[in-house]
Image 1 (cartoon, rainbow, N blue to C red):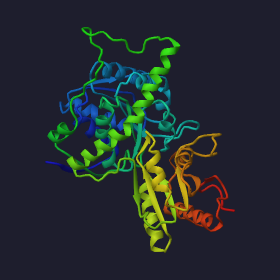
Image 2: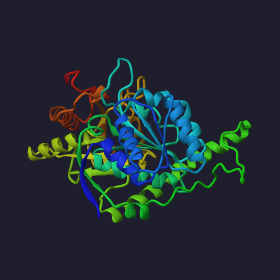
Image 3: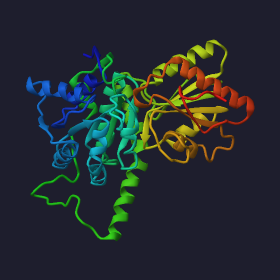
Length: 397
């Protein structure tokens, strides 16, 4: 029978790993993700979870350990935050290119300098082109569900890709929320045992990560790219089954809120979606025709779904909690993807970027009201005044 518990995002992630029956875990401490490993260490120590718990010498070692474990046929888990994510960067391409579907739990944290413990998406977003499934959760319940969904998708032989399952540090990782935990038997029915089609096995020798000729490299890159192209259909299929099995109501890629007759819209992902939804509801009560579109997966990027959801608006504000210094959009990462998605739409909405929540800064209701005011003025003027606004640090002209 399912249980309802009050859990932080980190505790919910640990519960998901337990029910997924992970077999090898490798940790290295860095806030705020460390709380996941603390929970898992207790589970292993008291016999709740039968897994090898290994302490790595650092994040590069962490990823190397779980790479070897997953390649040998074990369901493997690791995780990190902030500079720990970037320290392990060398390992991301070999893991994805080797088609090793391990999972990495990310509790987002700002990168240095300066030393900032606050939440920011830049750490995981910096890995977005390595071939990993990449998505964000809004709540502890969603991080629990996303972990199980990602294991199932990543391990599907049509995909075979590693997964970064992300939650905002502190805002989700450390704030408790209601989480429905299903029975082990339900999870076992949904998530079959880990089975790699090409495991390391002395009886069936294979090479992992060998040196190859230049003409062979393109073939492997094409295969990794094709896996990403194949992933959306598998994601939709798996989430539909997950919803039916566990009584959830997730959309695979984007979730819409009050968008039916909206003229302006916010495009957002992660923890600040909750506050944005409250702002939208309040503005609706004031007569503002505003809606919200929440993004669940950054990779694979859902081009058609984003275009369909956003094309109904006259103006869209893309809320960015990551940076892309010197990029074409002069702000964050998401606006690049949004404008590319809308390129072939005949009647494209006006789009602008709102940099908000960087370094763990709060994004209160008044900031979303500010964004809505700028978007409403853009609709009235027929143009946006700026490509990017640094919310809270500049005044509207």
